[in-house]
Length: 200
Image (tube, rainbow, N blue to C red; front, top):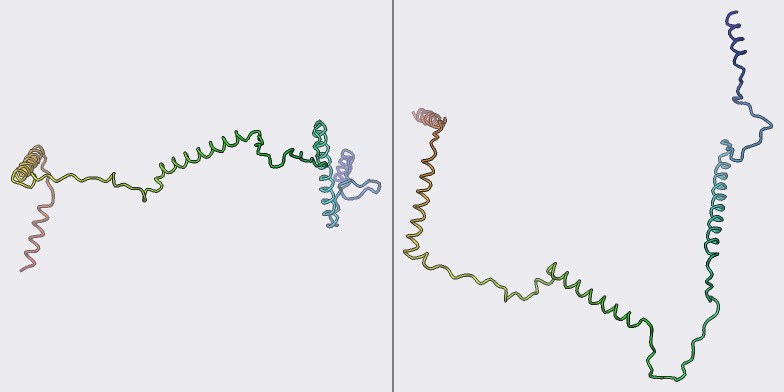
């Protein structure tokens, strides 16, 4: 009885009842409502939506282009062919002046000169053609040997140099007063003793 009273109290307090599954018969279908049971219909709807979107975008592009070109007043002569004026004298030797030809030739000459300068710099920087270059004037000339070093004076000088080096090394050894005690001598004596015992 208490559970029934509690259920009645809950139902009286919470009156909202959502429609979880039932369809309203009077509800109008939404424009992009998808019926998942019909797969081909979904694909066709997507294609149709994309096509409509592309048409709208193209119309907007055309409208914008038309507005941009509306301010242009230039109208080119696309249909009529202009007839060339006939020369008054056939084969006349008068040179026809072409406007801008001098500047064009000047620019071509300058461009050619710049290309030659760049090629010369590249050749100098990367030593192009170094194998075929004539280097006879740059060959190293060896010095003649000193003959005095082979004679008696040279031998005396060499002996004196060696003596000075030996004296210097002796002075450096005298300056070293540290005499380390190592195990090398006792080990050597022990090895000699063992070898002597093995001989008997």
